[in-house]
Length: 271
Image 1 (cartoon, helix red, strand yellow):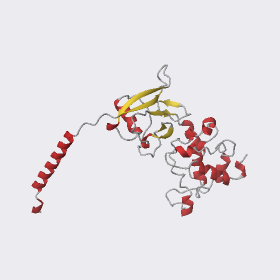
Image 2: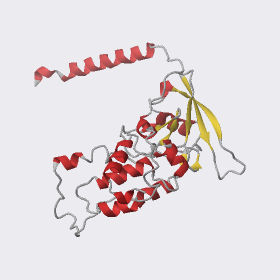
Image 3: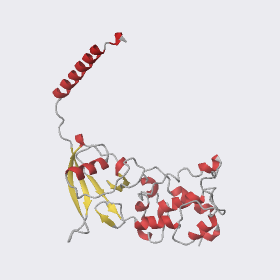
């Protein structure tokens, strides 16, 4: 133990830290790298306020790499009235969905373009009522989600916690690409069919969630689920435009479940 010479070790560490501090002090200061953000603003509680764009400049040298980092920096340092949703910052919760640079995506996983000559334009999700600034009203979207009864339904009563409901490997694989949906609504709000028929057409996100339970071998209510969708609008306003698949931040193929379900559903769903 005596060979460790702790006093010498501490002296070497002190010298190393001193050299690092000197090098840092001698380094030239970074020039400001200002990025322009143009953000949709509207406050319904402010009399006479109309939708408009506000411009903010953020120094990228002191900001994180994602658009959500910039929004938080603007809110904390420039304008505390800026309103938006956010939670996990990991692309899991779907809270920070918005239209960035013309594409529906999640602010927390959308990288800031380092080109300072180009401004980033940020809007709320399109074709939805706006609560305030970048916050869309998701009430109708989640009402549609609830309408497909997105939970496991069995013929016999389930004694929860007593035993597992087993699946084969093959049956489990049928759920891949379905269960990963985080209900951010990026896909549905990019779909022209949903823009014009959102009162009747369920949209790609809810249809994917519906098919997730139709494809689950443990669920016993396939016929009842199909009967709820047996009308000309709930499913058949999908025209495979593919905007949904292109914009999905989780990389899911939203059109595939819709097409597979159409080809396998019984005649009662066709009119």
